[in-house]
Figure (cartoon, rainbow, N blue to C red):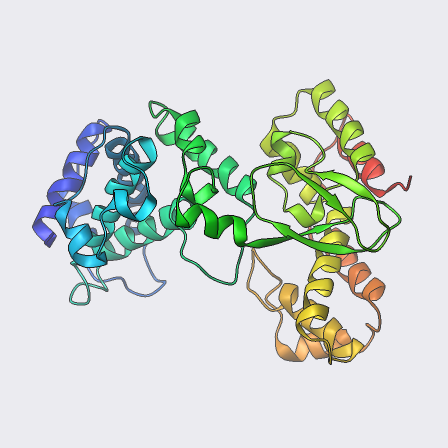
Length: 368
């Protein structure tokens, strides 16, 4: 698809939302991106267009519409959508056709128009959708229950007319349908922690939406994972699930105050307890990957994973700042306390007039 046809699509997308692609917006989209120096008005146009196209994409997916000739998918990848996903029909197949035709048509603008705002907007949307619905294989494994909840949330927001239940229940990316892709998902391994509060063992289990019966090789405790069928629990990474008795108390608090699952999961994730669990899991992962590393080397690797990335995912520290901080860190406990103290100092506590946050922290931190 060429530039003019994409502009026509975007104009149609604006019209569906009740808006108009103004001459100024068109000028911004067809202009080269000036690095990070977009003016406020330019940035507003880019953000607005991104949302308009995102809604346009999901609308087309919900109606089984495509962005270009379906034959181009097989020409480019060697298989049709149905052959690749081992599905003949259904809402997942419809979205896959929308996505792959979108991707192919957007990439027609490359490399000639790579630096246009239009191209960057289209490619960013493609990347956002791919990361949730059509991920490529890689070292990063996301628990399929987390991915399922994110898919459910996005479909509910952008495409409520899709049969969401059928979409999730017949989805090779979630391992909930037949075929090689589903088998590949199940063969992936995720990290969980033994749900015995006195055991520090981390375990690898199959990546599946099904509940598993797991036996810890260290303490021989047998437990169900996940221990409860709760939406907020599925939003947490599997290696930071609380022990079953804590989950029950936490759910009682959530129901008592009517806290939405998404917000409750974020509150648990923002607790000092979760900070500790995350660092412990990263330490265990690196200890397996680097069996010959010294304790100090392992600790520095864990520290760097949080300290080096830029905000909001990290602290954006320099190598010199990391080296200076590491001088006083000689154990995992030192490292965990460093991040908890820093978080408390740099992130002001949210208003908590009912003391709900304090109750959550108290439940998470107590020992059985």
